[in-house]
Length: 412
Image (cartoon, rainbow, N blue to C red; front, side, top):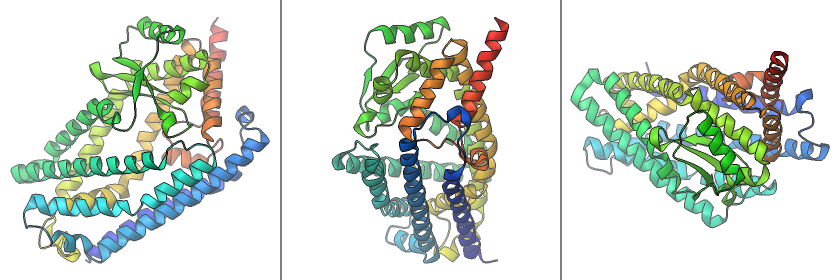
C-alpha cells in the first residue's frame, strides 16, 4: 500500500469536491429568483449582482486550484521533511518547523486575497481597506495563526507522550478547552483588528436594553465595531460567553438601518441566547474535537505514514497537517450536513424570537436590506444550501417569518 499515493488521491478528491461546489455556485446565478424576494434587487442591481457573483466564483475556483497545487507539491516532493531537516531533531522543534513551512506556504495565497479585496471588492464598492490596513491584517493573521498552531502542536506532543494510546478523550477535552478559551478571549483578540465602542446613549440603546431586561438577559456590553474601515457590508453577532458575553453591531448596520430594523436584528441575536444556541454549538464542537482526537490517535500510532514523505519517524506537525488537510477534510462534508441543519434550525428559532417581540415586518425589511447591501445570492442551489449553508436562504427565512406572523394574527 503506497501511503503517499493514497494521501495525494485524498487531497485530489477533496479538491474535486470543492471544485464541484464552486461550479454549482456559478450555475446558480441562472436560477429564477423566488417571488417573495423579487423586490430585493432592481434590474441594475441584479445585473451588478450577477457580475459580482461571477467574478467571486471564478476567483474562488482559481484560488482553490492554486492552493491544491501548492499542497500537492509540498507533499509529493517531501518539502516538509526537507525543511524540518534544517532544524534540531527534537519533537517540538521538528513540529514547529513543519508548521512554520505550512504558514509560509499560506503567504503564497496573499496575492489572491489582495486581488479579491483590493480589486473585486473595490470594484463593487465593498472595500474600505487601505493597502496599509490590508497588509497589517495579513501580518497579524500570520503571527496569530502560527502561534495558535504551534500551541496546539505542543499540546498534542505533551498529551501523546504522557498518555500514549489513551490520548483520544484527553486531547479532545484539551482542544475543547482551548476552543472555549479562544471564544472567551475573542473580544480581546478582535481588538487587534478592529476598534469597539459602546453603543451611544439614546433611544436605540434604551430600546435594546429594555429588550434584554424584559427577558432577564444580561450581556457585558453592546458594542459597535468599526467594520466600515474595511467593508461596506453589514452584520451583527454574539461573542464570548458567561460574564464576557457581548453583542456586536457593525457600524455599517447601525448607520444604514432604521431603529426598528436594528431592534429586529438585535432580537434575533437575543433569540440565539435565549435558546442556548451557543451551548448547542459547543456540544457539536466537542464532537468535532473527539473526531479529531481519534484521527490524531490513528495518525500518530501509524508510524508507516511518515517515511514515504521523507521523515525518519513521527513528526507531530506533519501529523496535524495530514489530519486537517486530508483526514478530517475528507469526512468534513458528512459532519457538516447535520451541523448546518442544526444551525439553520437555530436561525429559524432566532427569527421567531424577533417575530414574538413584534419585529417580524422590520426583520423582513432588515434582512432584505442586508442582502441588497451585501449582494447576496437570492436563489442558490438547494443542494448547495444543504451542504454548505449555516443559514436558510433569504426566501426561506421570509416565508417562515410570514407563517409565524399569520399564526399570530389567527391566534389574536
